[in-house]
Image (cartoon, rainbow, N blue to C red; front, side):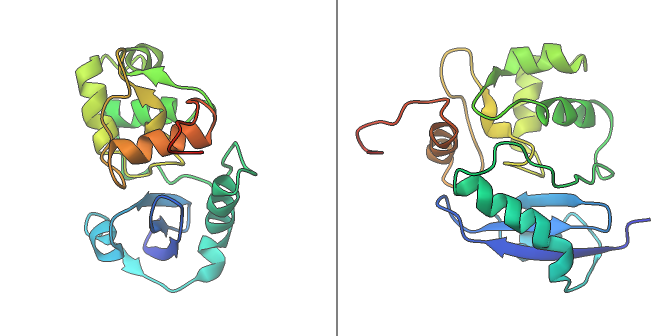
Length: 170
């Protein structure tokens, strides 16, 4: 049974990124401050850099352009129902690709309409590793609530090669 969480903060090109790891795996991450990330977890904190080391190393390798598939274990136990099904389906969307909200709705078999998929993406507790930045609107990028918003999403999709760099990126 999960009873503790250990945190790590990783500097990235899109801002400081916090990881929360239980005995089972990564339970939360994001651009939020550590106290804000911890709010919804309700777990006792332990200081265990060994527990977070693998996730930190993978995130660093991802941003260095050396990692395309995360192997960090994910602790799904704080999610359930349609949200869990959608996020687990999203977790399988490969690096360098994207799906529309509607395509993710269909793939997940959750019965959640495309608009509902957007809400699930906005509340994704494990961005980047569960790649909500790879979900786009049928007519453009769509929204993004992490980091600096849509500019962070654009940066991540460009980093992965899905989008071509703009003159500003060169």
